[in-house]
Length: 116
Length: 107
Image (tube, rainbow over all chains, first blue to last red; front, side, top):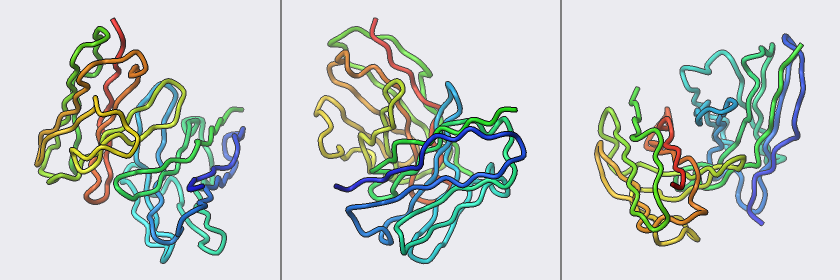
């Protein structure tokens, strides 16, 4: 089955670090860029950035550059989104999505809650 | 950067109605426009790409049109299961900006 499977929900404290993952299966992982999308509670979709797993070419949204780091390990078909120091405002649902014909496949989402 | 503006931000229509949502890009994006449906508490789903191409498995009551800067998503006969928020997105090049969303409810 062609799918993206994300890591589970996280509850963290402000200032902590975090790395969430998105594993692709059922297709050639290096042939498609993987994007990250944020959805804050009750809000719309925000594109954060995108990575080419084959060569780790990365593009960031200006709104998220410097706030997060996107990476990938093609040997295990996994893309990552990480924070070095979380803030309460990072609390949101985070989706990964495959860039095929537009964003044609999405992970199930990872809920991140940052609270003291 | 190119901005994507949807209208209306919300609408209420009756079952069987024809519903139209519009999306405007601040600069031309050719046909690189996608529409997504997000039902409450669910993962977004691709409905239409290349402005007018229906993703596999999407009901034929959904259609898209437009090119350049002005695009529309049309539901020919609204069904109860179409209650959702709909987003447009440009995907020709980064940044892959989404519209702010249109919340569709049943009257």
